[in-house]
Structure formats: structure tokens, C-alpha cells
Image (cartoon, rainbow, N blue to C red; front, side):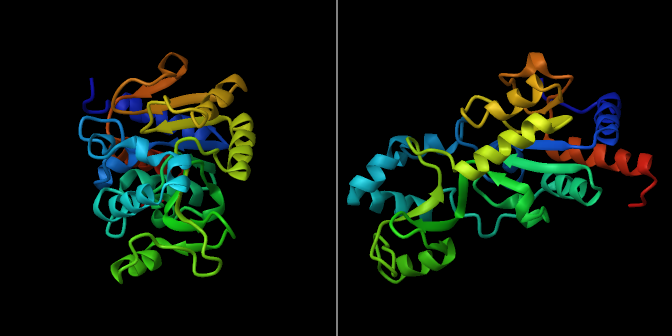
Length: 264
């Protein structure tokens, strides 16, 4: 059951971080729920409010009315992250990078909170894209979501590319759409070469993204899972913490700094 984290588990996590040189952090929707972003599959998740079938790539491209509905949902549901702030877990992961411990973050999330917390853009591999951007599927030009939102507020029900007139799509991976090739290949490469893989806020049930921790385990990495609920790789975990990620990561980071002789 989810509950308070024992000091013993905090010490175990801190020791693993201190002893490791190439840490990969894999994050899912659960890390961002502490920032107020609903997850997708929970009792109050986004899929209880909207029809996931509207988020198929084929439907979006082939049906203008479906695009209109999706742009309306984009504006009225949990896909707007303007005022959302990173939480303790995001900030702790960013500090791991400052300490020279973090190789990369592999994330299933589309909210951009890792970068907002201070993680370097080049160290964040977004397997499912980023909803803070909109991309033309014709010419490939990208616009900030805030810019396209202005077009919608000015009356464009279905915004179109102002360069080529093509279809604009939120730059997140829809059902039936492949994950980005570069990010996926790089995530696999980093996973097989890490010595510690820390999974935070993911049930590891969505593939192919969930293959990354499996690659790490098969290559000999130590696996840590921090999640409120069971995951598909619990049996392979060296350490499992069933608790809120913010508390687990912030407490462990404090002990890491103490062990490394760093103030703060």
C-alpha cells in the first residue's frame, strides 16, 4: 500500500545514486500528478473525460470535424500546461544532472515539466512528444502552442499552417503514430548503457516506451521503481518505493548531498 517512506528505503535509494555513474530516469504520468496534471488511465484520468478514439492519427488527419473536436479539447481539458509548475520530483531529477549523476531522462510525458524544472533540453528524451508545441504534418514547421491558441481565440476553429496551408497537429504522439525515431533510438542506446534505471510514476504498461527499463535490466542495470501502485516490472526491481515521487526523490537527494559533502 502507498504510505510513508521508511528511512531505510531512502538510504537505499541514496546509496544507489551515489554509487552509480550513468543514471537513466524513466518517467510517466504519475510524476506530474503532484503538479496537478491528471493521469490518463486513473479513476479521474483524462480518458474518463474524453474519447481516446479521437486521438488516433488516422482520424485526425482524415476528418476535419475530428480535428475541430480535438482542438476544442486541447483548449478546455487537461492538455494546457501554461500555469503548471514542476514539483519536488522534477526538481530533484534536475539536481541529479547538476551533480553529474544523470545520463538522461526518458519520459512518456508531454508536459515539458522536466525542462521547466531545469533539466537540459538535450538530456530529456520525449518519447511521446510535447504538447507545448504544434507541428505541421506537411512542411514540418513547429509553432508554440500559445501562438496557435491565439489563432483559435481569434476565430480559427481548425488552425492551419500559415506557411503551406497544411494540417497542424499537437506535437504529441497519437494512437497509431510511431514514436519519434531519433528519441527512440537514443533512449534505447542510453538504456542499455546505464548502470541505474529509476522508474518514476509509470505502470510500465504502455509499449514500446516501456521497453526502455526492460533493456536496462537485461543489460545489467539496477532497477528502482517509485510508483503509487503495481507495475509490470516489480519483480525485477532491486528497490521498490510505493509512495509519492516528490517525497521519495527530495529525501533521497538530501542524503546524496550529505554523502557527497555538498551543502544545501
